[in-house]
Length: 253
Image (cartoon, rainbow, N blue to C red; front, top):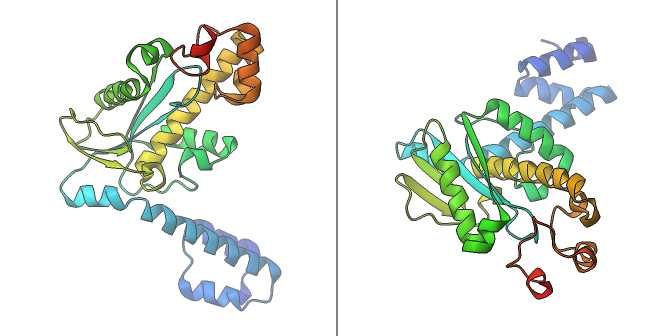
């Protein structure tokens, strides 16, 4: 096939069908058409992104080599805020699923997180997301509340995982194998997927609370201790969803 004889639309169709070979890409690099050069650059970016994502399946591949078939990633969102629940998600992805842009949710824009949320929900084998409310957080402390939520999300998965990958937290009472990874949401595709689900679910809930308690600005800061949030607490006092065991709220009541 002589790439130079093909129109840009025909070349785009080849890329879309996945029929592009290394020889074709090399020929396109020598093509004098500006559109051909743009196609090559886009293809190279896509290939680089695929390589990045494939590298994020390192721990999942190790688990499969150990004989595990359903590997769950688990993460949370909202341990630090002064208000609202902590959100926990557990996700099982198909083996090697490529989801472009998947990453630690904190590194993504809100628009990308929402797009990824929809894709994960559509393509995952199983997803479970739970909230642990502020009253429970006050009663048992934030770490224990997070762990409780993780157990609940994991046990709600169907099928049940035979290995669990966790972001930093250790769960000693799981009946299946587990591995805790520091900064796991940047190292594991399944933990990253869980981080997106947990973050988007919590943000959407805080937007609902913003409509219920507009004076606190929950839609903007999602309950984190920004200067404007603390000023609102001083002015109006804690709302029903504030964590009374957290500073600086504890000093105001």
